[in-house]
Length: 262
Ligand code: ADP
Image (cartoon, rainbow, N blue to C red):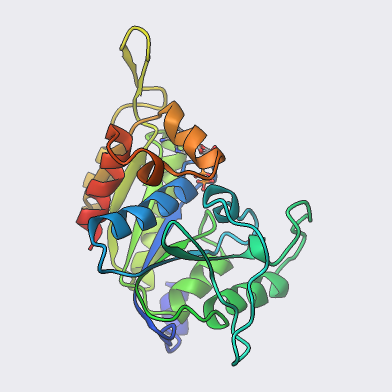
């Protein structure tokens, strides 16, 4: 109600970008960045005629440089806009390109806001069909500012099936609804682990918490990503599964989600 009573500021599209899809989570560490990266790659893999960008708006803990195997600083274009770095056909921009990897992110308030403003407004994306935005976890000022400043086609919310993660995912969904961003659905991550030796399946964080939350919020579950060693290894080595193992079940799960969101 507080948000609504302040009224919605006027949104300005990002130049050259047709549709923005944000990937959000209530809690950190639930696989939001992994999902954002693989979703961007899956959108490109599903339709090679589309141009895809990936904006790492997780200013406190940018993971896109590592996951997309990118390093370096962006060059400036003639009109002083930063040029995204490119890998696997995806144009990427991240706070991680602008600060030293080891530098502690001690910015607060306005400094984080001005960083977000730069990432939203001072990047020369060229022409993009979809820009996937990896949001910071939670429902604070940064999330609100991104949601209010640019037109967003839809938000996907990533959660593990654990109560504590789901409670925060619930808050995330409510925030988007308040600022009238369509929530496309929930992605349940790390739901099942299958032992590679005996094939026994274990639901480490619970089986279908996201499904129950989806029912409560009248949302769809867009997909269910297993807890799988290759997803973690692929992310850590900068070779996301959708790129490096496109035929695997894990990659297929992301490809199906990508087909659902557009
Ligand atoms: P967040 O962006 O929510 O903080 P990350 O995407 O950085 O989370 O994921 C946290 C860690 O969990 C990373 O090491 C990542 O590789 C790993 N991870 C994410 N999803 C999976 C999965 N489905 N299976 C295995 N490891 C995963």
